[in-house]
Length: 246
Image (cartoon, rainbow, N blue to C red; front, side, top):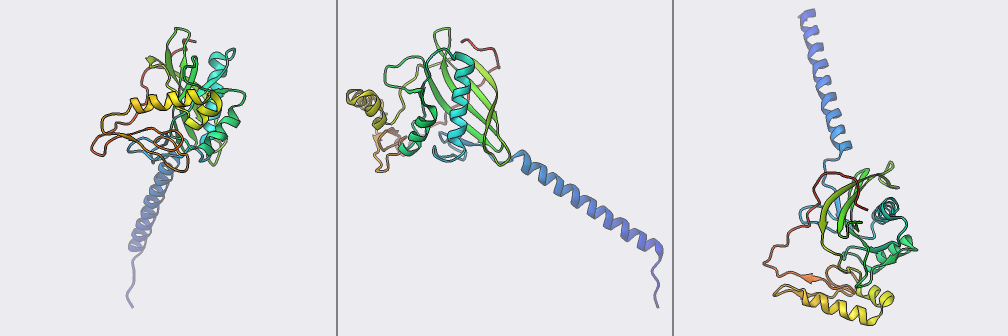
């Protein structure tokens, strides 16, 4: 009968231990990658090349509402909150935002001191919301609300504000036309519709969807670019964090 030396047995055991150790390290690295979040953040409004999230999909409403209230409380709590939401929203989602933001007022065309939600990004347990607000220097600038979510990605809470001292354009009303007509009057809604039509690029048309979805279409028609034109994504503000110009 053939015999197996103890050296061979020891070598086999060493090889098995090395394989097991390598496998464990690989699995741990994969776990870290999953926890840290390798996928791109979901954005609202949607950005070309990134996964989007619809306005009525949890936890987006809670993230945006909490961020907007927190930023206003920290920067200008003694002034009324007049908000302007992205055009990419349907009427059902709008009602949710309107209810949760009460007693704040939705922007009507011509309103000043408006707080515009420019973009929200949700990435696992973290979220950021970019808001354009009226500074005490007389122009609009951007603040990013950084948020941290609970386990499972819900109940996001504001952590800190990051200020971008770069002037931005004055706000343009982005509310659904049905909302503008209800809150601001038929004349204001018709004037806003005409303004949106006049702003269309050559060859573009206003689409109208039956479900009331805006941006583009529905009760809040937005420009639809020609098929052969490239529409660049909105840029995320860049700059250094500073104290606000309230």
